[in-house]
Length: 282
Image (cartoon, rainbow, N blue to C red; front, top):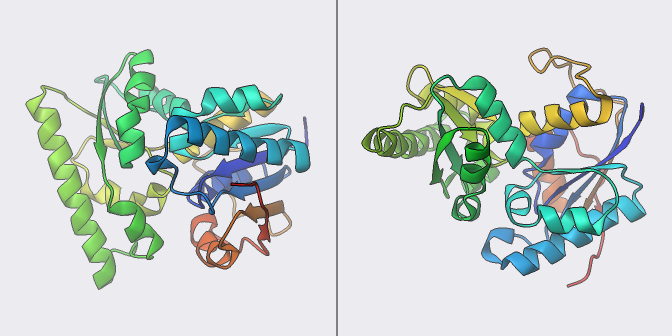
């Protein structure tokens, strides 16, 4: 599969950070990204409803866009609907949670890791389960203020709005590390369990205690996808080129295409182009 068509799905547009990492590693591939913006947030819905929506989105990418490999760039869908997606399509499917746990295992010496994510992902305990399978002890914390701060663009620590975000991060991490100490954990890894959080990585790296390494599950998922498709990494994750201007990319959304086009470039790092509106039903 030298020039595969890769489908990437998220309930919104945070998953564009995964797409960005994928494009950097496989610029020769064709990409189709779907944001199910009409039906977000997934986290407030039942497992059955999430599975239905995610399966419909996966089928759109495979049946109508010809995706030969799917990356579920949504932590909630990865946690609660991966089995349903795999049953709905006949192509390989990769979520973001297991690659994040695997990357944590490679990075950790103590075997204790911290995870920050949304409420829905934390309540699923999917990272705890995935980390346990890797022989790790994980402590998860929901950080509900971070997603809206990212979407507002408060991500530059050098300006007043960014300083607000930096202070929120400091408080969250202080609470998390205090909880870890109370439990007798010695964490040396922090996993970013939400696809919005890579935009805050410089702030997070500045705020974590010395000796704790930050793991981006979006980058880990992209690495895992490339391994699955090509059998090896063709580019180092530490030396990624700029996103090629001739990358074959189609973006779709189920609602709010104007907002997707406006915010999408912040996550992808360059223009998402003309986003096409699609109707997947109720």
